[in-house]
Length: 155
Length: 155
DNA sequence: AAATTTACGTCAGCCATATTGACATATCTT
DNA sequence: AAGATATGTCAATATGGCTGACGTAAATTT
Image (cartoon, rainbow over all chains, first blue to last red; front, side, top):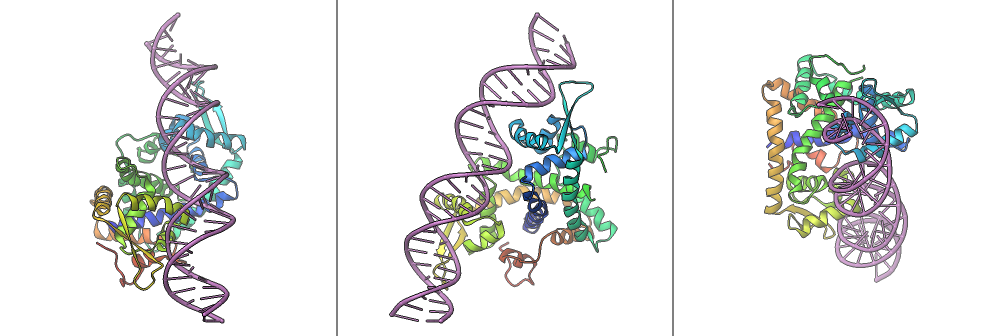
């Protein structure tokens, strides 16, 4: 049993998301809003259906959170060009500001944790995290992460 | 920005806890029950207060979940020897069976992900995860994890 | 011995986020 | 024209968090 890694993952993730959680309180948002904002910012033009795949929640659950983000001007919808049924999602400047602020906090922690680890070690960490992820039915975002660099996310 | 690591952590953790989530449904339990069972099994004689520190939830939230686990015979309480106010928590054989089953699933995933990574790489992964964790006010469990091996958890 | 603090339990109510099932609308596909 | 798809929405429910208040037993301090 890898009790060590199981517990390290628990605590590492707890503190990792804790950074953002604390900041989100000031906006009256929760973790759900962060997840939506993050992926919409990173993969502009994401469809609602894509978001459901990535977050693994139901349409109804997403609905409430997404509506708030739309109403408060963090995200805008554009009707799809090819398929006018689709609502493509984009972060507004206000949304971008929030996402980058939260990602900054998390990046600080990551950079700190990566400090003093040599390039081979960093490569091993990336390989480990990738290998922890299910690859059987990859959604659009995972395809972008694992895919041969066809559709890269926003930097 | 380390968008790559941020997203890898999200997906890795999502699928990592997904293993246990699926299994827990059969027992009518949720993630909260798993967390409680895990730490009680690993650190036998844990006090209620310790558990609150580790899980970072309130007494009331823990109360509901803990009561269920006690009622259904997964955990037993023993009055503390030195301090009779304390209720020390222990997993029953039934509880042990559940915890080890869930940890087995997660260990499988970890072992698979670690496969093909050399010892130096594995060491780097451990160092990274440890460095991701806040060390300012370590609780009893974190002390055991990071501490100089005084009070080791159950293997 | 009395007062205070600590460890734990519990009651009542609230909130956020998730669920299922059903149904409506617009649009694309056949 | 019929059927499938993408999205939105209504209603009801569950889980797992939260706060505030209060009670009891046992330890500690005065």
